[in-house]
Amino acid sequence: MTLGVLLMAYVAALYLLGMWLLLRSLQGQQTAATSGTEGRFALKEGQTIVGVGETPVGLDFYLGDSVMEENSYD
Image 1 (cartoon, rainbow, N blue to C red):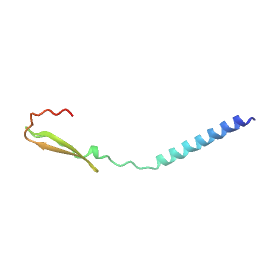
Image 2: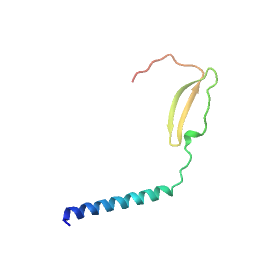
Image 3: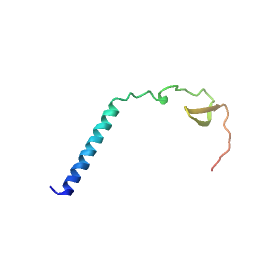
Image 4: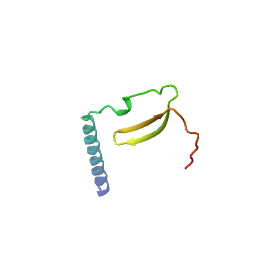
């Protein structure tokens, strides 16, 4: 066999070994419930979302009873 064929066989074997190890490690992991499936809420009549803030644990929605008539185009 030539050196090129041996090199391709070696690289293919390393690739297959890496894929096998990756699949084995992924099978053992448990997936946790995401925060997107918890805490659904509905707005009451007259309420609007006036702001959204991102925190390390999720999104905060700021609710209000009136809407400002101001257009802001940044």
